[in-house]
Image 1 (spheres, rainbow, N blue to C red):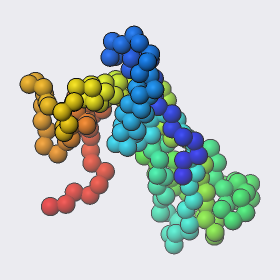
Image 2 (image 1 turned 90 degrees about the vertical axis):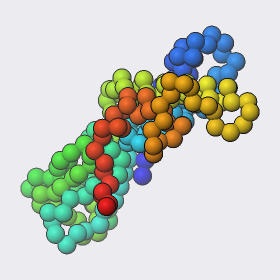
Image 3 (image 1 turned 180 degrees about the vertical axis):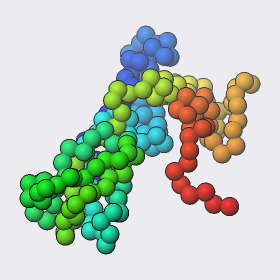
Length: 195
């Protein structure tokens, strides 16, 4: 569970500059496009701006089975505690080699101690600093969505420009240039391949 609401990682003023707009009369509407583009990228790439999260896992039969945190990439684990007592695990499980974060993808293994009633993790996820390609992709996406809403006065899906590229399996809402900027066209899949 995320304890802090993820902030947009671009601003309305950045989007206004991208659109070459000087008037601030549409800032409230532009904020919606900023939030939407940041959320779309977060849905596809994991946490971007730093967020605090907590999760609970219950005992496994084997001690060598890892837990996988939901919100990635993981920056750091700030606390590991016994779910039943609420005490930090190192406080009474001496000597503790501890829970080791093996990967920013949220894979955590323990070396000695698995509490009988479950273990809780508090951690931070996101990217520090936020990579430039994420900022650029969010600005491009927000501008794309804004322009589509302003030029589409006949209803339906906006027309693709003559130099636009249609990629099977991708939607108009996430242009190919944004997908390339984020590396989505070359990123390994996390799900199981079928077929």
